[in-house]
Length: 263
Length: 320
Image (cartoon, rainbow over all chains, first blue to last red; front, side):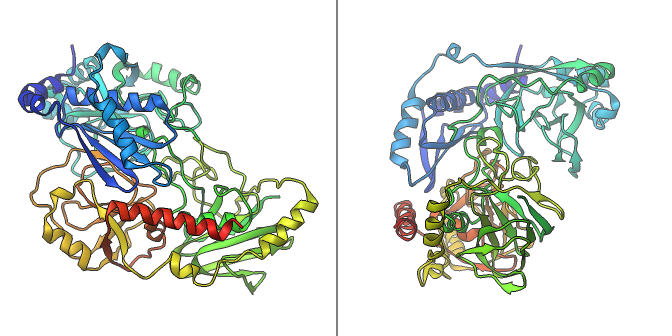
């Protein structure tokens, strides 16, 4: 069962995506970076290729690469021009971008995120129900039964853009963003879903809150989610939320470093 | 032997050369806005080039030293006084126990750096001492400094004889005449064409390279918002969000360009017409609100040559 939004997009864009599937454009975005462009659409295929390329390059732990930033259909490679060159890194990127990797090679990490949809945490739940002509219970059921994918992270530390929100739940952003959204807030906007990892302003509609810490700068890796992860939301009640809130500090694993090229 | 903050100034944070390797997790590099002034402050003291220092913004801080220290002030032309006497910038200076350093307003430039021998002692978070203001981590408690903060200083290696020799060598260390004019020329900021250059026609580039733009009040370490002649892409298509290089000049719908800077969001959805070159990035950190800025186009090859030249120039001064 899966990514309803993606399936729709894929069908609508299949022809175009296929046409572009083999295209690869490497742009000198600055004197210190390359933008590897695999296409210009949001699609499962492109996303998978970006994530594969990202992981292939990240695995190298190449000291010439300072940062790697995947997005929907592109990967930004940032480097120190005193230490490397566009040519060197373009060659490297091209080698991996042209490789057709079987999907099984990279097993995505599956992350379950408990969510309390209690009214105190979900100021926009009733409004979403009204807009989508569903009961709040149906909204919760739809949100928590979908499978999401981490497209990329941006906006704030640990903020993961999740695709896979059922089409029936797609509502526009708030007209006026909230000045402050609490860390752990689970929100939706357009075809996307997210969990706010740190207190920040935000224009997405809040639907619940997780007691799990999504971002912890002292942990390795600091972010619970990384590009390519699969995400499921699991409903919990207020009692479970309170219990879990008290015991979350040890929740982040210590196994692998989140760095591309630690120095 | 911590240093006490008696007055934090406008925005004083602990920074180093930045936090790299985490932009895929939405974590921006942060780090000194004028990376060269920061580096020179450390070089003047014989520190590691990446030792944590203080970055002060527009209005400097007042600090009290419990113990003797060697310090260096670099960056924006700041009215700094040590125990009431004018304190020179761009050289190592000695502070006696109980000394008070008062840094007031900056006359030209926006950011001054204060380095202390051996560096400030803050924890390294993800490999860097830089303060991430949005993520509230790194630096001193993940925040800007406030009155009463006690900043610990790293212990210097104990080797008195060698040290005094080093000290005298260091005290002689100055920037050569004309160095500041080389570092901070009054010429246009050099840029290369950006990742979405084909989105813009000749008219857009003509404006960017011939008009001057004013740095708006609404500018900070994450981005400098510019005011001036509107720049429009050829057509109003939407860009798919992509990763943003440091110094990218993006053009939102209102046509007013934004230079994305050290604390930037790591992804964005506006087309990028140009990108500040690495060799001029430190000059962006010295732009003040209401200052007029002009841009000049160079090729990627010229940009790369400039950064190599700059590196050679710095090495010539500091490796003897």
